[in-house]
Amino acid sequence: MVTILGNKIIIDSSRATLDDKSSFEQAVNTIIEGGATEVVVDLSKTVYLPSELLGYLMGKKRSLMGKGMDIKIIAISDPLKRVFDEARMSGFLGV
Image (cartoon, rainbow, N blue to C red; front, side, top):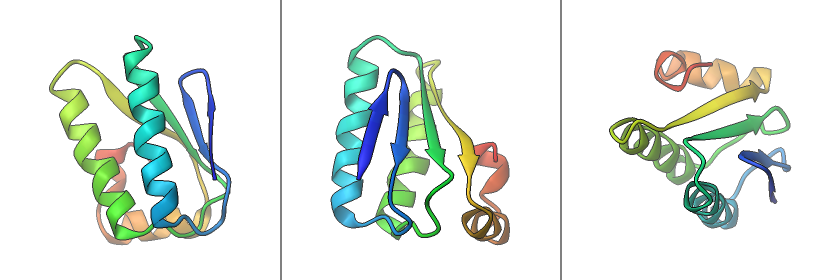
């Protein structure tokens, strides 16, 4: 489940699914269309992201950075942080 609070997106489940990817994409678009220049993501409850959602997150961050916008992860669970570290994505995603 994905929740939007202002320009913040929270993935409320420990194991995100492809349905969450679709909801996440819609949430990002809603926030950007609302005029925000930064999308804040809270992954503190999430220990698993499907590769499709992770790929979307990285691609969208790259795309937004080219437009002077950003996706910023403000909280991340320890298990997910280890995955990001091992995959060398932490620096790019800012976690």
